[in-house]
Image 1 (cartoon, helix red, strand yellow):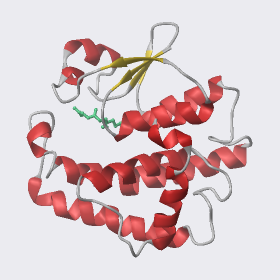
Image 2 (tube, rainbow, N blue to C red):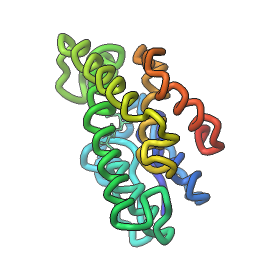
Image 3 (cartoon, protein in one colour):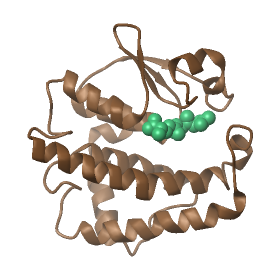
Image 4 (spheres, rainbow, N blue to C red):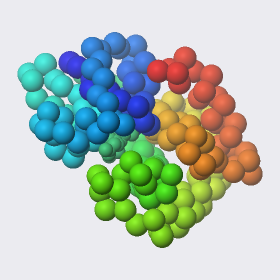
Length: 203
Ligand SMILES: N[C@@H](CCC(=O)N[C@@H](CS)C(=O)NCC(=O)O)C(=O)O
């Protein structure tokens, strides 16, 4: 397998997940800033033109970080990162989907319509007037998640999972583009420091 990698929080999710699995893959860098990911060669790997992409041993490609991470987990025999029972896996998917739809998507859309506008305006439709609204939705959902984290070590209780990996990489990214979590979100701030202390956080 080979991982087509670039800067950005989505590839970081897969790298951090791999580090948690203790697995190393051949890494091939794609220049996102130069738009290499939007050119024909990469579109054959991922017709969405986004990063990352995973090349499987049979030469086919997988994209979408949640699909890639679930695949890697299964190839490793099924670990706590996804869950070892149907109930645990459903719990992981429930939280991962909430984080993806309610925090990741509005946060990254807000970024693409504002700080990232110069880079993204030729790559997709952009609506700069809507940027602040998307950022506000992401913040509101972080506050909601902060309440849900009361008394919990990780998103799925005492089990570190894909949901933690995804949220960590995007909150980390948000802090670099003017969307840091509010200091009022004390549960999330403490959770962030716990995850940051894991060796995988620098992957
Ligand atoms: N839903 C996709 C999102 C992928 C994505 O947005 N990747 C970013 C990098 S963090 C990207 O390729 N941005 C450059 C571009 O869209 O041209 C996934 O799960 O993989």
